[in-house]
Length: 345
Ligand code: HPA
Ligand code: ZN
Image (cartoon, rainbow, N blue to C red; front, top):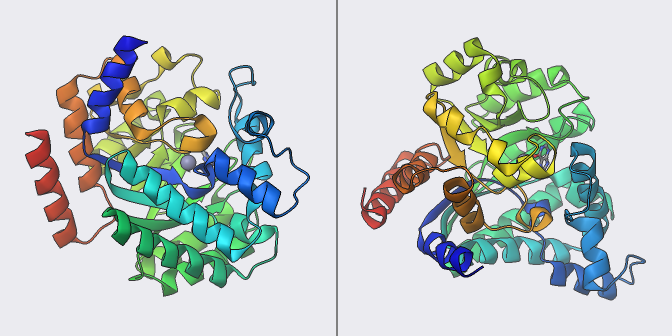
């Protein structure tokens, strides 16, 4: 335990870049208890019982169905504009405390609007307002990504894409396709992502996580993905790996999430280093820090300890993440220079 604590502190001290973090997977447990009490929710308001519903437990089945089920329970908590403001502020405060310097926070407007049928445009504007405020207060550069689920309707996705496109320049920079990749195709979303890209949004797609490498090709060629969420099955098809190398596509890898959703049987089997050795532009991210009960520091530790990533490579990957960020060139240059200086690269 001593050793782990000591090494975790070294990772805490590093300046960090997070490209793949879901707001809905970042709620503090104490805050959920507060919300449950304030809104008289029937959900258990004690921390331990609540945790079993919204966070992955050691004794859970490590399947994507179980992983996704946590998000369904979490949808009950978005009960007022104040709740949405609070969870956004706290997610950014928690990232800042973990020494995250650049955060791309993705959120799912359809999820946040569901319990109280809030208009999608209101929900998006609440997240934008709170994110801006918290970013200034905690001195962290934050950009937002609107996320839509494959297992929900294309009509809703189209509305979100449209509203997001209208808000480029307010800190909202990209569109993401998430959700049940194993059972729901992305074909119904081709046109929506094409238009979103034309409107000026960046594109990142969850692919090759719970589905085959072919989904990564589809994400790049049909949906216009500049980055891939997870993509850990890329090496299963050499042609897809070659395409990703050629394009320099950045992969937002989330090691613990992959373990907990059943993509790999053990942490040690995770292909992060194989991807890197095969020329894939990997970055290290959390996905859902609260659901997985992790921090980005912990994921850096996992990469170096369980997966044997050399420290130098980790630092270089932090800079690679900054270079793959959806931020304007001048901001990116400053961020990269600052990181290189602090990381002594
Ligand atoms: N995959 C798909 N959808 C998601 C994930 C994920 O890892 N996390 C949150 N929504
Ligand atoms: Zn994700």
